[in-house]
Length: 297
Image (cartoon, rainbow, N blue to C red; front, side):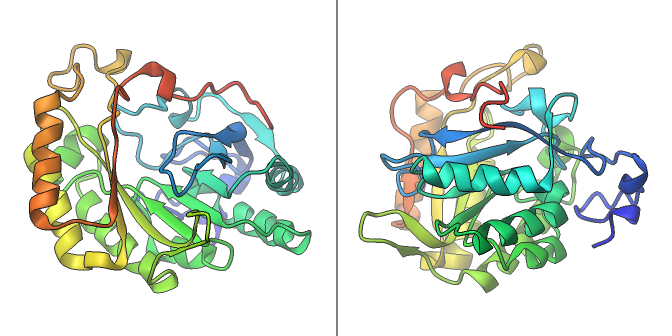
């Protein structure tokens, strides 16, 4: 895919990133990242006791108003990384015992990642690669990355296009996410786990419950379960943390209540969802947001 007229994401900016222009993602032709380290706060089959080798990239094609990683999502910060360095980072994380390589918000760097991961595999990278995504993806970009990705970890944020328009400036999000998940399943039609319980292949779809929007959460779960049944795992998350950028925006200015969360979980059980993960305990804390201090880069 040509970055001289960039169409890597559904925004279809068509800017010439090779000439230093920046699209909606906020990035030009230089890879930038914020952290590469063992991450312990993913689903049990991803982090386990070994940790996931999470590489957080700067910039984002969606940039939700409530984003927990807002300080890097707008592209205003990040350390430059060459393709060669990205290859080395993956191998270093494997040497540290990572259960997998976890590419966090990476669509806008897809061509560079494809090259770097292919080279890492040639040099001995043997752990699975996870594509950790907002779900706002073009099928063409998914196809591009399919040779180096083993596990697809998309969000499905909204079923209501009006909500996605307000919070993410992407009225097309629901339909786009549906198409993206369909495409991901072409490359990973079933979930496969190793004897220790770590996922090796498959699709896990995440949904973050937002305060005041339990009805939309229930509609998301209904769609996912009725459409895919046991082809995917579903991860329901209650870790929404209101940060300063939404302090005056109700209902995003508060956490999800216990009643809201239990309502969604009860509905998931009523639907018959068996392959999934639910968060327990106090997860809506700043401590669950990584420090973007350029560790490991």
